[in-house]
Every structure is written in structure tokens, then in C-alpha cells.
Length: 84
Image (cartoon, rainbow, N blue to C red):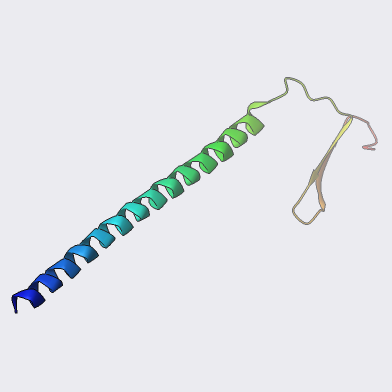
């Protein structure tokens, strides 16, 4: 009876060590995934900020055409008297 109890305890101890190793591995994966997501988000935000940071002081054109979502002209602003 004692021998059987010791075998069960050894098996539980072994499974406890395995579980601890699995948890450690999952924590590594979780940290790596979090770092990757934060890195991608940082790159995306940095790119978005840089893309919007340039505003020209002067825009020069003879004509501006405002196009809607369906590629239809919504408005035309022209510097010519006939609106060409």
C-alpha cells in the first residue's frame, strides 16, 4: 500500500513539474505576442503621425474638383470666369 501511495505522489509531482514548464512556456509566448502587437502598433502610429504631419503652407492650382465616394463631381472651384 505504501509503495502505491509513493508512485501516485511521484506521478503527481512529475505532472506538477510538467504543468509549471507549460505555464512558463505560455508566459513566454504571451510576452512575445504582446511585444509584437505593441511593436506593430507603434510602427503603425508612427507612420500615421508622419503621414499627417506635413501640411504645405501654400497650395496653388487653377481648379479644384471635389469628387464624392461614387466618383461623381460634387463641387468645382475654378479661377477662370467660365469655370473651365
